[in-house]
Image (cartoon, rainbow, N blue to C red; front, side, top):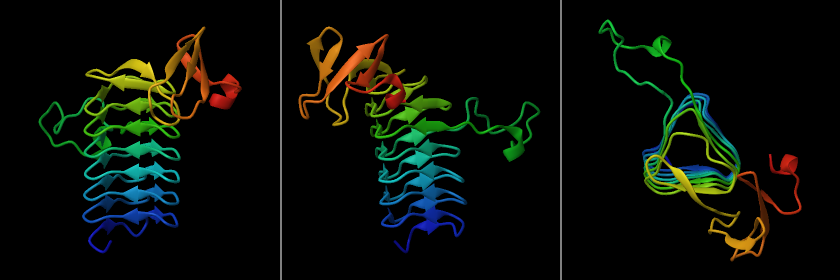
Length: 199
């Protein structure tokens, strides 16, 4: 889109689109078939894998990393400053050298809902879902559905994104796909896969 602001040093993968009024900063990398929505912001050096969707007005601050198939909902925010201030204790304006950027990592297939906030540094696990409006202040396990302020796990979800049904004995089933999952020690893995395969 001609009205988007994409820095010359940014890398945009084949089939990706950057929509009206979006900004992609220096040395950001977008994989193949990504969609960056209207008014979204992709910070300097942010890395996104293939098939990511960053919806309208979402803010993805550096040094965030988005693995393949990640969804970031409208107006969601991935922060990068744990203790933000505009000025130093002496009242002087902060510069880039006065703080260390910390990032949010979104692992494969996860989703961050509309107006959710991920407070860096945190990692949202594989295929997990952060509900709309949630505030994530600690890491989210793979396949977890987290809601609220601060976000807490209320269910498990599968690759299809819908809540899983308890099949008993630590087993869970996706009502949409029939896929089976195993819960062990507060973590979920896909049945038939080892912990290493799920890592």
